Image 1: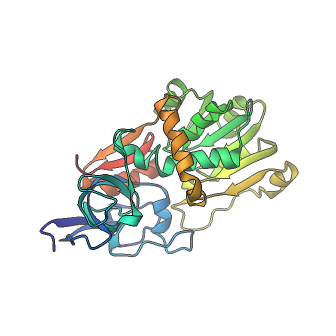
Image 2 (image 1 turned 90 degrees about the vertical axis):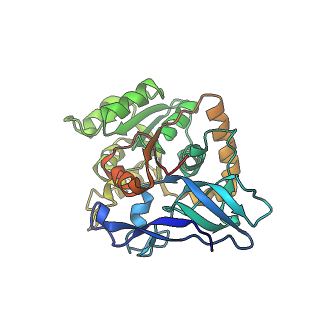
Image 3 (image 1 turned 60 degrees about the vertical axis):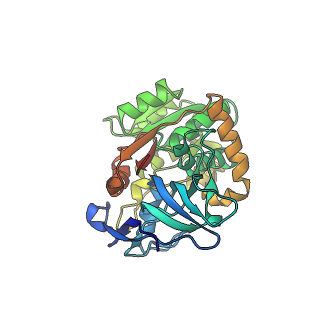
Length: 337
């Protein structure tokens, strides 16, 4: 048994509505040695993502619910301390899903090596990780953007949304972003080249702002948020529009099903494609996506932002902040250098 004491953040109760600090606790236990085919890892960065909220519920979904009194699992980046697999050496940087703990012992097959020379290692859970691939495949495979079309993306200031908009620009679209702060919208306009932005917290109704920003209607709607914002966008869809359905963050903390407009008549009359997707659907093509995204980053065609919270103990608060829109770009927790 290792002499290292491992701190872990456990889910101790299922949130009702927005998660609170009381849903989590920190424990300690001795770190195991790496067995054959395993790696002993020290965590450097932890990724916190909206999808984790769904797994904190017992409701049936595409992934199993988190078990109570166990560490919250999710994307993490770490340094190999001990390897019992010939593919990895001590000191290698890896990305995997061991989640909210300072150290971990994991099967080597569940990790991927990160090249620190390619880009900052934090990008392995951001633009060159799950959020980047989500934006890439959702936009290109489902959205199928064509030059001159109008692409609207909600949650545009988040890790996925800002990449969706930039991919749309690369493909020649007019891009409109919806977010909840002037800071985010200014970044989308000035730094990322979005054509128009909408602050859904403004006094002007989102529908009215959309009509001004999308005079020719909407051809692609990349939906990250759901709710009333999506209702407003759907009213403006053009014939043969496409909707990559990625997330519904406005609804994740609802304790009862949301009641909204019946959208099926609109989708039918305008022959709209609405397709929900998971990034894992495209796992076989992940290397292709990472290669092209990496090229765009290297060429300066694709920019990204990271919101980094310092300190392992602050992981729950960083996660909770996602639901009030505190993050501009990818939300990360830096555990150690």
